[in-house]
Amino acid sequence: MAEFEVLYNLLDLDIEQRYQQEQTKRDFFNIAGFPKVLGAIDCTHVQIRSCHDSFILSQSSIARYIEGHDMYDSLLIGDNGYSLKKWLMTPVLSPQTAGENAYNEAHRRTRSAIESTFGMLKMRFRCLDRSGGALQYSVKKVAEIFVACCVLHNIATTRGCLLDISETRLNAINQQEADFDEPVAAPESGRNVRNIIIAEHFTENE
Image (cartoon, rainbow, N blue to C red; front, side, top):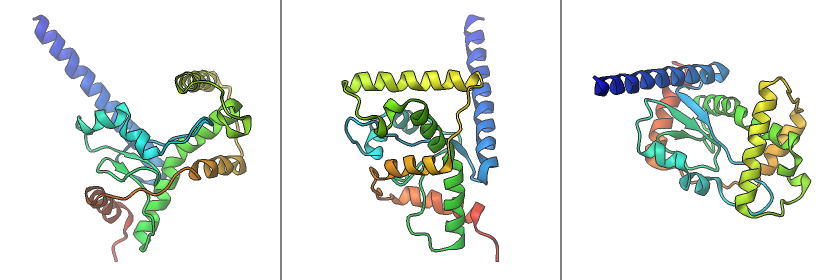
């Protein structure tokens, strides 16, 4: 009986997680029609030292988890600082067709959520922005400061302390981030998935 109850609880948890994931994908889809998106990822640079986005992801628990688990037909999206994967969609570097341009525009609009979040973080906590100078601490301490800022930002947002950020300022922050990123080669397996998405969702029938 105890074993059955544990199994039931695990199944119930899995169903609840799947429901939440499907709701998240619907919310992302409603932004710009980009399908299957479970999350948007990006890196933001705090002035101590630079490291490429793709390397950071490859060393993270996120990549290890996704590579070892079923994503249930879900995707992440990121900029060209990341390597295109079957589960991580990046923009088309040199779009040649209307479908590729439509894909890139939907990708940009959908991914703007994470860029806006980083922009607001750096506006609220200027120590994270390059305009505030470099943090004179160890990498471990800087990571702890960043997490603390994220927690405080979430508390402030939950309690209605919203922060407006102008499009000009957001673009300036995004340009600073782009200066660190160089395009990463796109493996064939990732290109195949991206081509299917473009054909099925962003290419109009002639």
